[in-house]
Image (cartoon, rainbow, N blue to C red; front, side, top):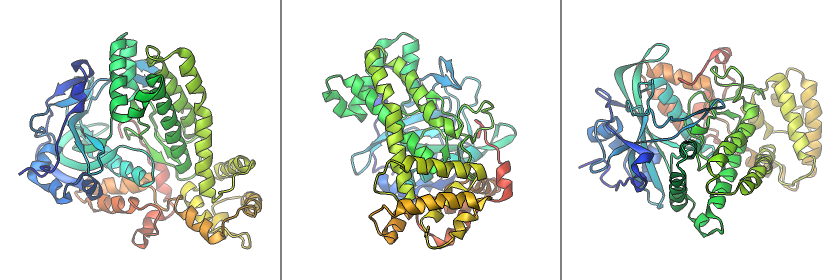
Length: 486
């Protein structure tokens, strides 16, 4: 009996014509083994986590077998990469196995990332290395636990098969799930080819499966675009509020559902630097932390061009013009929550901006500061917070303003503290923690992956057994460099 016999697989991408995808024959890993399995996601899907280690499951998760009766598919898309349009990209190392429905009626598309060559691999090998697969497995689940929309990670399989990047490494396959992997570039490719019927078919598909309420709107395609604008604005606000840098915000890495998609040279900031660039391949800083909200809008403009056959230019421009306000409003909500403010006041944005300027000046640890801020007490010197600044007087000046602002709150201090602890994580996937887990895994020790995954699944809890993961990063953490091959 199949370990996934409780699941019924379909392949809804087959509702679209063959121009949208290619049938794929995976290149399986040799002698695959299970590196990590996500018990919590297994529970959501309605399968026992023990099933992932069974030979039949490993065969499916490593590309040795198909879902019976269903083809594996690689999707076609294009995209703007670092501002330059690339006319054909597509799933170069990912393929869709099919989709299933969980107990709550939510449909999940299953993808294998790293299962070998596809017609869209271009000059690549279609493989993923253990290093990058560990990073995506851990970060996608960390983001989910933080409440940030994201693709999910079910399992990671490994093999001794060699893969060549900057140096020889070993291969791995990530089984990742999402409601959809459709990207901005999925629309762009057909616009630039002049295939407007295909744009309409894809938009109808997206409305049917993901935004059915848009079908009832007076202008369904305009309603669809408005949803994408809103979700993108909210996603970028989430990233900024938690100090997350994506690193490669090309339009082919932007989800039409507003999910965090395609984890590569990402990074959570340690010391706050508004101009932080997490991708060492990004020499011009196009995707720096403080550029991300604007890049989100730039990418939406690219998508808007692809919607021109469906929506008037005037209508698209009007929706695009709402992006900045939507982003700012949502970001301000998130930042007020981080500061424990529930009463909206006009000077709040200035208070937040003053704090970020002070943190930027001293590269104050972003996560540690906001976590410790929950213990702020205007009757003490707040030493744990002051010690995060080189110039303590800079903090003292801001703290005086913050204390005065808290006087205008209606919530008791104890309730404010609990609310702040519930939104300011104690644990994030710092790059050095991922690096330690990677180095251990490359020696055959996967325990740190399991421990980090368990810890990051409850990022707001104290978890004394994982206290070391909440410490200030070591000096060598600043030397870690990640790129598009990471």
